[in-house]
Image (cartoon, rainbow, N blue to C red; front, top):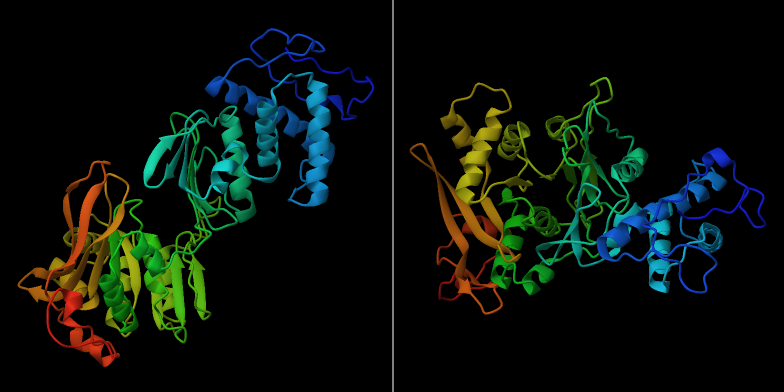
Length: 473
């Protein structure tokens, strides 16, 4: 066991004994030659990280006990110096013997606990990480460059994970407990968080964090990433400015919200925009933006404000554009009604794997509104309201692409007619295992071309893979 200084030993920290948890046990590794009798952590890898996490909690508990449990620490020269001094004192007091690298790792864990979100704080600070996934205390995955990998970071135990969840949701007034063991929240920087705990999470408390990009992506970035071509970008800009109703469709993690952000920044700055989201993620550059966010129910089950309520309310706010982060249910019907009643230029996203699937999803979600409407009527509403479906796809190798830009041309019998304007052509795999792809126009000019021209866009035939004179004026 680690040795503690006696209560009255010189230099011992004067903290009431009941508030001082015992130092974590070690594996009984041999004492280092010439040491003062302290123990050495000899493990490496996962076991080492686990013991450092336990040791960091012991140090954090003592620092917090001396400051007061409710004290909120933020980075400043004075705070950093205070933590360094107390860390050094407690490390000496523990009589633990660690290497310089282990001490540095331990200090990062302590500062992460005191002023961040525990062991995952370094992951949140990494610019290459786009998603952090905590599958219980011992399995933390990250997504980087489209690939998911297991890290060597560990929590001390499941209670440690719960502490971090509580630290995330407490400032937002959200709750999580056995009666309602899941919660949506966001970090101060805007990153989206979902947490679910036992009994629903069988293998331990789970946290999923979709990181908020500090550097707002632009259409040029998507072109550089080869997510779309310059011709596609020019076409989409013309569609947004010309007030076409656009649905961004795609699977989970395909980049729908990122693409919606890019498209929404094409909206002219002199238009009033109302955004509606479950958890605010959109980063619009315009000034005249009203941001609305759904509200979960209170402990007694009352007070819930759903996306659908916000969509209905937004129509009374004189919006020139309505941007809905994601349609998941009955609000889809309200969105279609808004698109059909003068709110042109609306944007939203939904989960679907193809443009045709997106139509089917809109049908299904419209039925969830509880209105007894025939399917033919719903399809007519969709074909009349939606002008364009932009399909976002995440390939198996991690690449994110705009795989289809599809025009909704109307109805033919009971079927909604779709026509691809651009599509992704997958040619195979290269030596590096990456897909070789090409984003190509289909050679078809959309039926709404006259609408684009009326707003000042005369796109050359080459944009659509055609030859002939013309250009944008």
